[in-house]
Image (tube, rainbow over all chains, first blue to last red):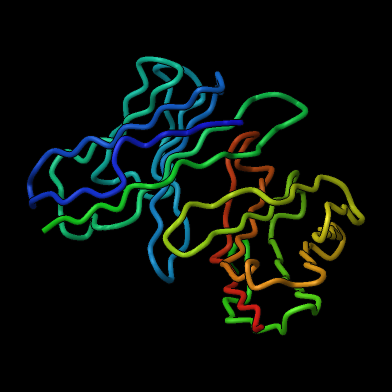
Length: 115
Length: 113
């Protein structure tokens, strides 16, 4: 089974703090994603990575950055956390194979509260 | 027009009946289509993928794709209370490239015993 592991289920941080959300996948997937999910707004893509050290902005990258130094690990960084970044953060990964293309597998999610 | 639209519900179905969930999408040349189930407080899990027109069955689940009309649906036969969840439709629009998905806002389904 594909396993996508997010380092924390719940986080509480203060406004202005630098926050790191970590995601690790064990299936050698090329693609990794960070989403946030908010009531009424659905799943929104923050950043996407299709290879080590490669990244693309998603729909809402402002206030976030990402790092992918190793294929299995994709980190989301909130440079200076703000209260409007309180949300559920979901990491996903997908292979770049013709057979299983585009299927994304999700981690359990991190519920971040910024006070 | 939203890229992927779903009726947010809630959709209420009696136990044992067929639940029908619908999704429309705007990009005519979309390539891949998915249904994810998300229980409250949990992350989405894939239940069906479909890539070509027609029906695809997996157990009690049937996905239907009609590219000409730009809709994809999910039927759940013999609905069980454990099917109560939010169902997310996801589409891979051609313009987004091979990897990205666009998600609908989800339909909340409740199965009443």
